[in-house]
Image (cartoon, rainbow, N blue to C red):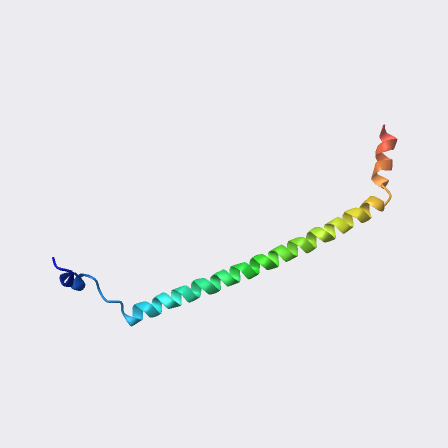
Length: 75
């Protein structure tokens, strides 16, 4: 076969096909943006919660250990 005979074998891209491809790329892009924003929000929530727990732990370490007094009486 000659090169010019291959042309009918490959369909020419259509405008509709290109529009659908562009729409899919756009949808994928916005889905990725949304995923990253949700992940950033989750990370921020996690760091804030961890910091609050660290502060509560330090506060608890300064409190009296009443439960320990009960355990000492049992020994």
